[in-house]
Length: 475
Image (cartoon, rainbow, N blue to C red; front, top):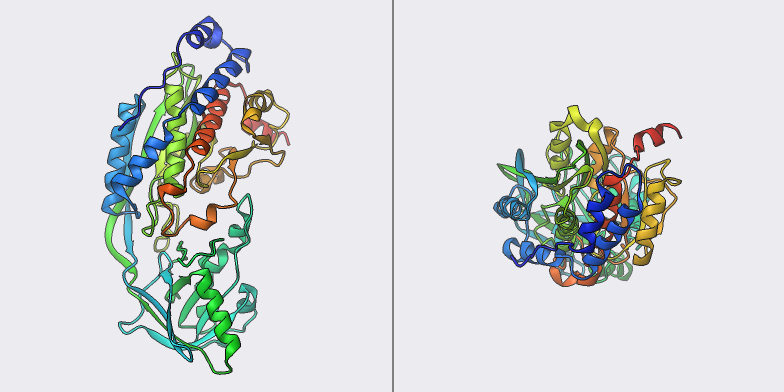
């Protein structure tokens, strides 16, 4: 590991000793320290070294796999060496899902193989696969409009595209096609399900991701966007039925475990008041999980390291969590976000002391906006934050943050306020959940900009007097 301590010395140390610990409001000293953290991160934050080593040492890290477990141990050792306090690996049981063999092909009238991948959590086909006539729908709504029993014995194909958007809402809109689509097809009698990959790329690789697990499942696959276009053309060239074969060896193969890795910088004045940040450690098996979510782990850990290197502590505790098992579904009743739910359930009695939560889980492109909980738009924290973040090209989003990322969902549901440092996601779905989710997709300068924003904002938040819950209640 080539991470050196990034100590802020000299004038910054004198500045803090002169008045930072006793300041009860959002002080000028807090702002200047945040500016120093910002500028130090831009010189080289250390985030690149973290994600480089993580993805090189361990490659893909499917939930419950040996590589995910080994990377968690490495992470705990790394954060102990960084000087973080209360480093812990908290394990929880998990069903290990493996992809196995995957094949999708047109049998007639134009025989050819298609580039495909099984959806996460899906089931296997019979040994010889499934052969059936394909019923092709341009949109998911067309499938939903079909009466139950109308697709008996058929393979359903949905060709709907995912619209690129800076905030990722195109993917959010399309997600039910993958998560719920196989069950909707099965309700109508289908024996197999194929969708156009939910990615926004036009390359010939497929985009995986979780589907719902449970009774009524049928084998489900994603094909690459060019292959979806190929199917559309094939349909237009013939009046004959298109017959396809689907082969999957996927399934839950063993009892295993995943884990969260937890570490913190303890607050000097309010150690029991906790700001939770982090990313998820697990990844899909197709790439190396660099942008999803090695980058998020690296960004938040490097930001906290800069704060840990300061001569004094923040007023409140800042806790970084490397959540396990964010990606893959689980059999009922667990379903998804197993690590996030375990974290929240384990701390159910103290969640009222979690003052804010946010996750970096949207790649490695630059942050363009800050969103705060309801009622915080006219706060001293917002004014101080924008003074520090505006030079990074970050604007304030007046729409209140309603979530802080997937792994904060159980916390938000329990009443913990969320904030967001929103990243540019126009290209994120070109790579995420594909074989092209690799280190080369990360721009080190953009990574440093993320760390600069996180470190500066966290310092301001940890040292402010803001009460997000009270502000929200007053709305």
